[in-house]
Amino acid sequence: MSPRKERADALRNRESVLAAADELFARSESPGSVSMDDIAAAAGVGKGTLFRRFGDRTGLVHTLAEARIAPLRDAVESGPAPLGPTTPPYERVPALLAAILRFKLDNRHLSLALEDTGGGSPYQAPHYTWWHRILRGALNEITDDGDFTAHALLAATRADLVEHLAGEQDSDPERMMAQLMTFTAKVLGKR
Image 1: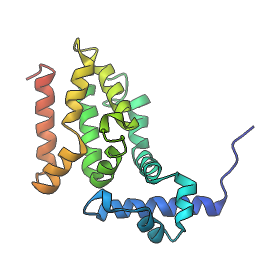
Image 2: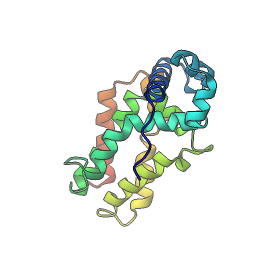
Image 3: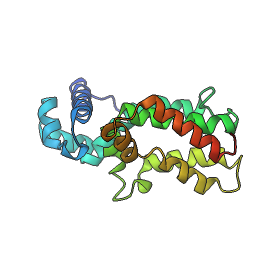
Image 4: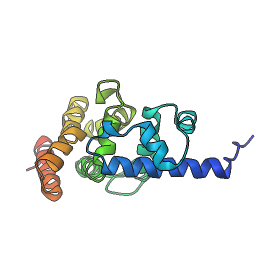
């Protein structure tokens, strides 16, 4: 039995909600200031539509983030170099971290909202466990402690740190990327 096709109006509503939420997160001073009421009003739908469709704010944030990250996830899981699984680990680890940082720079407030969905700890959020698993797998080919090293490297790409550097200190994104690559090379023992 094939899955039921979504009604055209439901699909339009979903796309309107995701576009409105995306815009509100991009313009917000703080991701916590974006409410379900704000999103419903901007999308031109009732608040009940949001809750029926996404469950709650966390569900909406996860859906929006997944839509944004899906192409990157595909490249990481089955794509070509430098992100794909056949890339040698000394090349893949920096490429993965660069992709994470680029995503968080391009989606700063959405990334902050996403990390807030981990129940008080970003380490419990599903996106974090996925990134950690992928990075740990590549690192296990290089080091005896891929688990800890993956956590340590991912800490350098936390959304709150990215926001602090890019938003509050007005750091140049390309300089941030260069610094992350230098740090990663040191951690991997490549100078």
